[in-house]
Length: 304
Image (cartoon, rainbow, N blue to C red; front, side):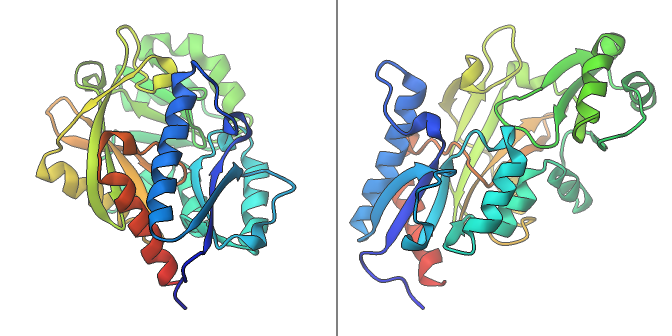
């Protein structure tokens, strides 16, 4: 059944971003992005509201679809988020779909990409409750420098960079983490310090635009939360193709998504993240992007 004119859509955020915060560029960009998408959807005849995903007073059955945008607290409350997902999808459609969101929440999806022949940074999964030690693991894989992060994370939550010689110092935090949750260990890619990390945006499976994220001097985290900066970027054809193949590993075709790429020492692109839940999309950096996003949403709703 096709979606008619005057359909109601809800953009999802978290409670920190319900109201503007003058002077806060980070929050201002959130409102700008949602404004650009809202205007593009309104031109297609949709009514658009926004609310926090955990709003207990919101009537989810009154909206045709809930679109994830800036739910940037879900990884701090993963169990609550899972319960909410299961409940709300009985009342309205989620975009991206429930199955996609559940799959993408856990960064072990990277190992699925690897199994399907896609290049990722060398990665090891350590399950919650494991008896392994950090020193023991690193003595086997022989990585000089390592990234440690939870399997469910965002905004660089509990993300650490250290050398193999420093493993003993990081053993307590490693043991604390695996006592509660699964973690990933990845070989650090030094190119992120020089070249940065590329983010490629896709709508309805089609490449839209890209940006290059760079860490501030002395840091390795490219997120703007930690002083990272954003620059224009034109990806090579093989980078776009790698990103497209990564999207195709999703259990359902995502309506929208972002693929982050790093480069190894030989300059080969690697998939570092596949962002299908609440990706920053930098609509403000590409004039056609908001319309492409709105068109992708409209197409998905017409097919539902």
